[in-house]
Every structure is written in C-alpha cells, then in structure tokens.
Length: 291
Image 1 (spheres, rainbow, N blue to C red):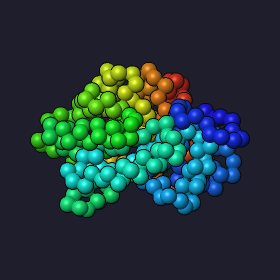
Image 2 (image 1 turned 120 degrees about the vertical axis):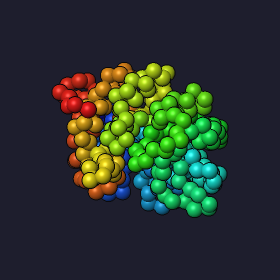
Image 3 (image 1 turned 135 degrees about the horizontal axis):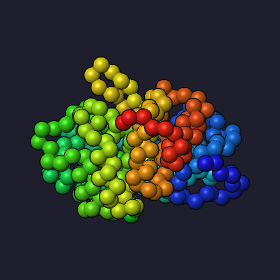
C-alpha cells in the first residue's frame, strides 16, 4: 500500500490502492513524515480560498500523494441556486492540484436562496432525474472531465418515487457518461433503514461498464433507537466489511478504496489500521459475517 516519497516535482494524478480522508487534525503528521497510504481525499470546499494554510498544506502534500476531490456543497439536485461561482472555484482548485478524481453527491441542498449545508435526499422520480442529469452534463462540460456521483444514506423514501437509487444512478451513467462513487456503508445504512437489499444493489451495479465505478468509500455508522446514522465517526462495522468483500468479488476491478472518517477524528494510527484491513477483505482473506 505504501509508496516511496518523491523528493521533487509531483506524483501522478491517478488514484489507486487505499486512501484516507485528509483532515486538519492530521496535517502535522503528514507534513512531518511520509504516511503509508496511497492517496488522499479532501472535501473540495475546504480549499476554495486563493491562499491560506489549508491550501498550502494540500498543495504541499500533493507533491507526494495523488488527490481525490469530494464535493459536499454543490447540491446538484437543488431546483434553485445552481451556483456557477461555486463551479468556478472548483475549476481553480482542479487546476491547482490536478486531482485523480472529482466527485459529488446524489442529493440537493438549497432552496429559495438559502443553502442548508446538508446532503438532503433526492426524490427518485423522472422530473428529478431530468434536472439532475442536465446538471451533471453541464458540470462535466464546464470542468471538461468526468464526474463521479456518490450514492447517499437517507432517512426517508418518497411514495411517488419512480425508481430506486441504483436505477437512478445507472441511468445517469448511461445518459451523461458520469461515473459512480460507491459508498458501501451508505448501501448498508439504507438496507437497515428502508428494508432495501444491498447485495442486490451490488449485483445490479456489477452489470454496468467496468469503468463506471471509480472509487469506493468505507465508513462507520451509529445505531440509534430509530435508525442507523451515517456519521463517519467510528471504525467500519463487520457487516460493512462483509458487504465490501462481496463488492470486491462482484466488481472484479482494482477500484481505489477510501477510509472515510469525519467526526470524532481519531489518531492517525487508527485510520492506518483501518486502511490495512482493506486488502484482506478484497482478497477474501477474512471470514465473513452475515450481511
């Protein structure tokens, strides 16, 4: 999983192997020594400024690590406030760090001039699809690159949905040429919250063209009295690891995998321990649990 750091210039942009999300709590560790991960993922909006310490750190680390940009604020499914200035800032960041992959979420997040800073569930109907597909196509045209859309965890489904999430994403791939960022934890959370079938979802995703899935996310969740909450604040659960093992077998591709941790940030050693588990489940070396 580890690579030798380079002394000058910049490593290639392609992401492969196992990465971790870069968080400010770990800046000093990454700056002081080479951390044995293959790539880093950052939330794009945290680095939109034209200067400052965060951008300095990202550009410095980009010399030794490929980077994936993961957007959390564009809200492609919002009926209003599709912000061209947001896209312009993303384009500048892309030019600065030459990312291996750029992604957004299957969600909306703005209404009547107000951005709510959340990944809100999209109605999975034909009208929403037409809007979302047009936004994805426009974004890809503006950025001149393929965009990957992540399946999200939700806590409601809509009675007037015309399709399920996998059908929606598969149609997006067909109609726009976009890719999918597959969050395995989100599949499991939705299985438990809505009675959906995560294994069936994986079987259907495996029917897409081989290059459709560009990245996989693994994360932790919390069990509450009402539902599972996708909080990215703990180790990956046994059930999610097992689902990931099934995904690795079904997809039969060398897809980059990210350990995602956004709340209650642990010591870097905890992230690295999680990252080391990935090849064992990819290669079927760990006995599974029931999904």
